Every structure is written in structure tokens, then in C-alpha cells.
Length: 229
Image (tube, rainbow, N blue to C red; front, side):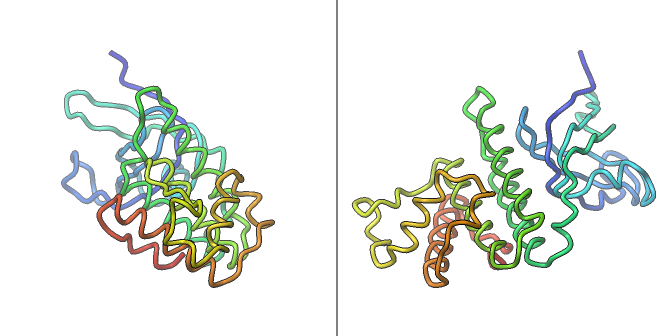
């Protein structure tokens, strides 16, 4: 039985492992990833602050992830991470960081978006998250907020919860045709094209409220990071 596996993965969160998890020491960490092959993955990251691997496994890095699985303990550890997208610009601006954190928390809270059995669901989730993070990497503050809403709207579609914004089926949006039009427009646009689609402040707030309410209903709660989008 193979014990080493390779994934196309996006790092979502890295936290201290503590001393009691799989015998790991205080310098070790736990990392969560979204993978195209198996959805969410959690693995221990061994090594101190100066280790090469610890520098590679950081939130929003994306690439080829190598995992070793111990079938006896049913534990996983990161053996290597060939980063292909570093996205250093995300940490250079507060608005970028907060929008990216909202992306990561939403994915984690919804178990990676789920899959229908053929692996396409996780691939779609990876493509959406990666595209939004690429756009956030050099986005200005106003665009960061719109990219956050863009992600929430499309993530609702990934979860099968996206409401139809057409006038007939979404009477609660009739009061704000700007939000309805914008959501219709961005439904078929890649995130890098979002800067070319204008939106006034009131319509943005309406679209934002709709996306948050939709996902809160699906997940059973509001996520704290949504407040910063």
C-alpha cells in the first residue's frame, strides 16, 4: 500500500501543533490545504522556524504537495511542497490579507465545497480560489472588497446554494437592480476581469449582504472574516 501521495494543493491555514498531536513538538505546526484530488487535507508540518519546508508551507501558497501517510496512526505529514504560486502581494496590504483570509475561512468552514464523486467539484473549487487569490495579489483596496464578494457569490454556486438573481425569482433584489445586474454580470466572468465591471457603493453593499446571508444560511452561521470584506 502506498504511503506517499502528491496533490495539487492550496495552503489555507497553518497553526501551532502543540505538544500532544501525534507526538509533535512545540515547534511543529498543523497545516490545512485544499486539494484538487481529495478536497480538504490536514497534515503536520515538522521543523523549526528556520526550516526550508516551514517557509514554503504558508497560507495562499499553491503548488505540488507531497504527503506521507502513516496508516498505523492514521496521521499525515508534509514531506515537501513545490510552490508554483507564492502570491507575496497579499500580505503587503491589509485589505488583500483580510479578503484572502475570508476566502480561506469560507473554504474550511464548508469542507472544501464537497464533490460529486468525479473530482470535478474540488477542481472547480481550486480554480475559483486560485483565481481570486491571484487577483488579490495586486488589487487595490476597493477591488479587494469586490473580489471578496465575487468569491462568496461563486462559492455559493459551488455549494449549490446560489440564488437566481433574475427579477422573477429574486423579488427581494428588485429594490436594487444595480446589485442584481452586477451579480448577473460577474457570474460568467473570471476574477481578473472584475476590475472592468463598475458598481456603485450602495449596490455593492446590497450584493455583499445577499452573498453573506446566502452562505450563512447554508453554513449555519456568519463567519467573522466576512465582516472585513
